[in-house]
Length: 101
Image (cartoon, rainbow, N blue to C red; front, side):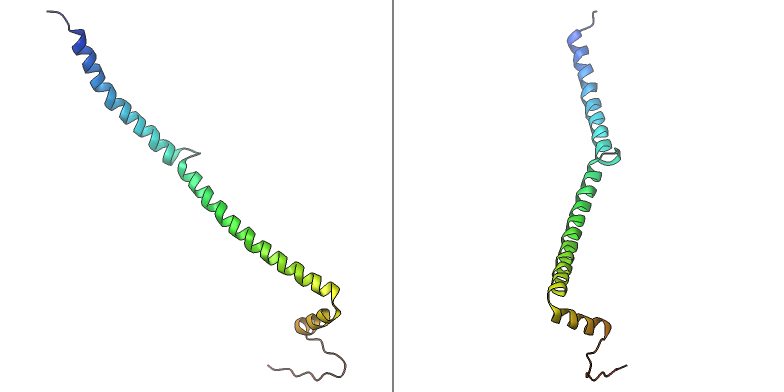
């Protein structure tokens, strides 16, 4: 009795397909979760980038407001006087100053 090659080849393929599926799943899991440059690290980097963009926008708004304030203080004498009175509690000669505690 001889060996039937067709049956032998079919048995080899029956073991090969589950092996390929398992290896593919292990590699996919490794790339998703454990690799240095994994998908999770990409997602974290994307979230961090969005947070930093929001922070940059907020800080740019503050810078613009400060630039406008500096421009007002350097060009208008009345605004300098008002700033000094508010910030440093300066008073003009002849003003009555009341201190409330």
